Length: 476
Image (cartoon, rainbow, N blue to C red; front, side, top):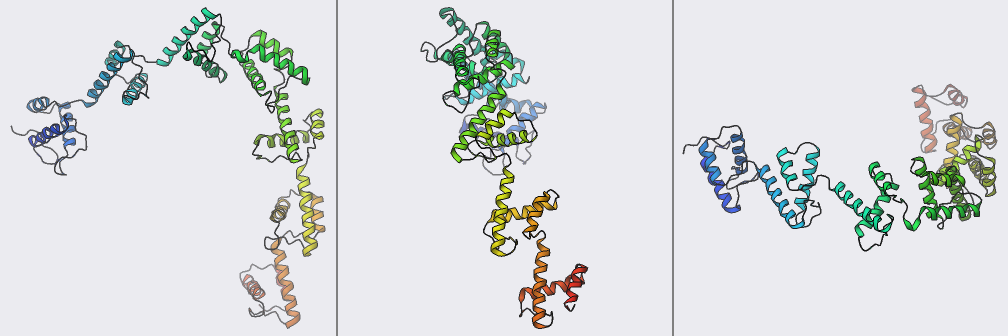
């Protein structure tokens, strides 16, 4: 037969067909991967196979070629063929298990589980062919197994209530562990706001209790009443392990009240003891107890901003100081914080401590020239530098500036260094009778003298410094 189609690489159609026959003999099919190579590295059988499909879709493949490929079992649409293969595997699964809900974790055929999931996604996006949708539905395919499972469980719960008079399925109920776990899961979803409104309504129609029987609403409420009678307030501390469960329960009740999920009776009972109106007071009490615990451990209330044991405690303490500063902290709270020794102005204390350190340095060295090269107290080095920054920004209190001036504080280190070198030059001139300092005389001073001449030539030396050097008989 005369070749009608010539491959891009120049090989005849019959030669490529021969390659395909050989491939099928080795692999049992003609679905050659797109980049499969056979024989010479210049022959791309996979490319040729794909080309035949494309040419036929365009209606340009000779009938005789189509016939010969059909006789070889050629697959014209591999995607459709793969779909049929997976569908057949699904029918086998259904015959064995009675349904089509293949899990993505199905060990025997995980590919089938992923394929089933893909069909649901494709249908949801409107991309699944209607013929395939019908074929799947005719075989009982469930497009939303989660909703179906929920309906089955609610029916089981209805049956449980008919028999037992309530919906409190014990977590250890051996007759139906799946139902027991499902009931627990619904309570958890409801607490976290993850349960759909229609499902909440359906469960409440069954008088479903959102708190488990172990910690029933009535029991927790009675415990709360006891706490109020003992502490004279209904606030429950989360810092006490004995009341942590009750504190969490009370927090949930406040959330439910805000969302309108409590019954009128429950609202009335909680309001009678003031529990719903004191959530902020409860949080304050919790933080106060944390601060007391810190004080007992460290001997002070200066909680670091990033205290690792409780990062929020440091910011809470800072907030109390700000509220007092602006007159927003209740006198009763101030009194309680005073009683455990809260320092309302820790920065003032820190400044005083560092000023004392500077005084010690001044007594020891005769000056306030604190530098990393002459001071091992790096906190003091940093503080001295910060005082200059604060003063330059115009944020230093006059009283503090006066106290620092009284110690001979050096505000401009560069000016101070120039003055020190000038004094060295003055002494040199008094001894030698001139200002021509050679490097052999004093290397550091010699370099400084050279720099003054260079700065003057560049017009970078201040007039008052030029005058002071001239007064020494400095030669430019």
